[in-house]
Length: 182
Image (spheres, rainbow, N blue to C red):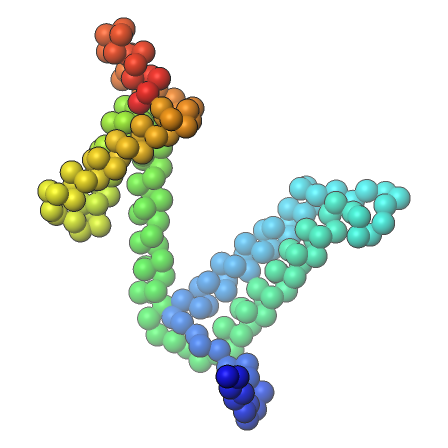
């Protein structure tokens, strides 16, 4: 069944549900769009004696120019809209997600030093603890899952992940086994 709602005015048609961080997002998105626009000449080329639609730079230019124009309209709409309080709390909430990017970067940094298996077996329970889990059973399950992931990736799928520098201190027969499988 199709329901058709009657629109009373253009304002109702284009009414936006704004959030606290709308203005901050609009500014960041416009700055990012302008940065991409400034890089078009460096990253793409216009070829002489070639049709407009066949130019390597044409479609990237269309998309980035469109993105910049719509980002400017978004910023204009945000500036002209009534002020919404709570912007700082919203932006702080966004920034909290960067913590998990930092955890990932530390994990990636740790793998070549302590090895894929030890890094995975350390970071999975640490992230679960950070997320609020405290049950020992959960940590044991995560250790098993981490071990299974390492075995599947290194042994079965033969993904080339560098061995840990710490493996150099192991006896020869264990070191070669660890480098190949974990």
